Length: 315
Image 1 (cartoon, rainbow, N blue to C red):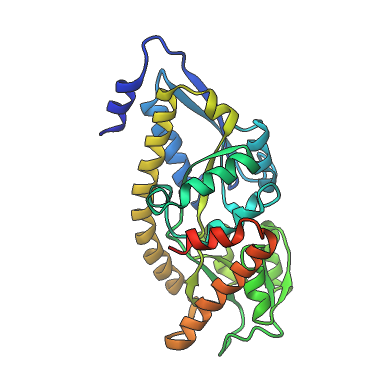
Image 2: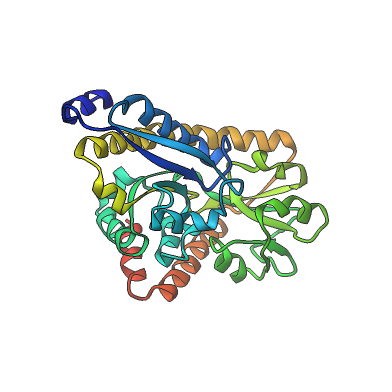
């Protein structure tokens, strides 16, 4: 059923329009904000008289991206666009979200959604409304060639997303803010970094990157969270508009991402970024190591929920 039809079907006469404050962890107009911004446009178009989102922007100019999860939890922000790795400070289990390429609609079908929703409710005071970029994998990017999975002697800029995996290959791990990565690469402070197949051109990192390691691993998914208190206060009509828009974002976004992955790969090739490909058994071992090290870290961090999440998200 079209979104507008859903809205008209469930909107009570005379209901007061509600405005929600929206923030992205990433700068406005960049790759990992674009689908969220399309979602907002859809809500504001189809939700006139029912629900609107006041988008104040994203990235460090608005707030520390790693504080956005807490801002959603406390209700300072009503709806946030951020990856699970950005709110592990309030919900350590959010790190497991990188381990599935399923969107929310697919997670509902697999049975994983209810468990994830309960964790978000309890620990983040949030409703997991939707997710995008779940079809875009991470890659290791380097300025020095490698012939095996051994990263001994290489300094790799890392985040919690791939810390355990890169460490298991012998890399020396370096933490820097995203805004410092270009200079760190340029000056040789780091020899490489982890990042999705998408987005390096937004940051200018293509200018200081020589190699991309294949295959990709994990999912660079970005979650759309709504403050639970605010969500519970909405009418069925208002929630229906938001849910339908999120489902449309997922359907259209997933299809676009599969094409964007191809075009970004070609764009990197045209830029002169060479591919180091682990194939056959070596490629399988590379991916197996990535998964095993991630789950070991997740289960260690959350013994209570890690095993169940592994069971649900590995389907």
